[in-house]
Length: 240
Image 1: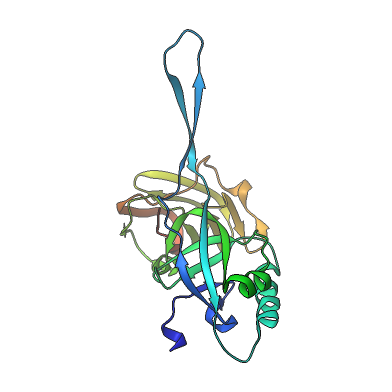
Image 2: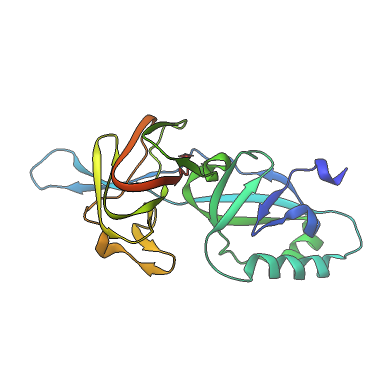
């Protein structure tokens, strides 16, 4: 019965395993575009400056305790240890949208024990990056020749790309070239963190372009010039 209750999954732990289930999830209009409105003396209306980003969103879960071997004090202790053990963004999935995940950080303060004793429920809040990511977008796509791959979402994604090859290489995505020099075995490019590296060693000095690859909505043509055995892409398909 418990397995059919709504749950969330965070830091590789399911809430049901910590004796919590979701009673209600907040509704929201989606991430807000970050724009600035600037007033200019003598000019009617404000200028709009697009900061070319979306703001984080807050996700709230109203939770309640499952009856079991643990009492409220022990459950509260376990949940605090789980949520607060380390800072940073981690994958957050819930049973309402099991095919997508968010990158979420728990940075809230709460008194779960007191709230559960008083009202029988508590609210847990996560601060999330604006996009939702498809779980199937974590699967690597390996190319051994020029190919076209399809982005099924309406927003461009920022992929991880591993180029297996040596020497001077040019990677073309939708006609835009990304040049690399003196590649030794392979080079990794992460468009989300805007870094080129090989394992733990920086390779930014070997990347001779000022922008990082993106995969647009729909068809993306990919080819390369140079000594390349394969290109591996983790596309990170995303939406709001």
